[in-house]
Image (cartoon, rainbow, N blue to C red):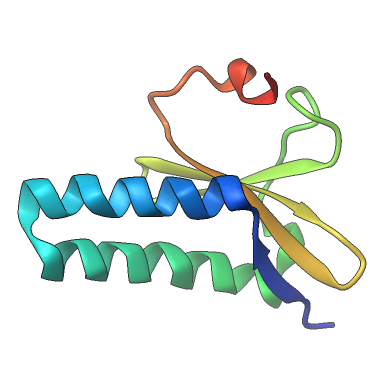
Length: 99
């Protein structure tokens, strides 16, 4: 069953901030390509939503999927959709996400 993909406002804000940072460091074309690769990785979850790692230790029902070893995509599989909750750097203190 293919599910719809939806981004939380927090995930959208994080994508915007990440794009702005990469753009400042490497230019618009690279930032656009990086963001597209992140979004493409998220889209893979519509076909295979349970492929990520369960992270019930952080928040019940949440899973993570890595992206290029630098980003973690936090998401929840719901009945008809995959909800992207956060997109964060792997350097972030993960237990603080629930605050």
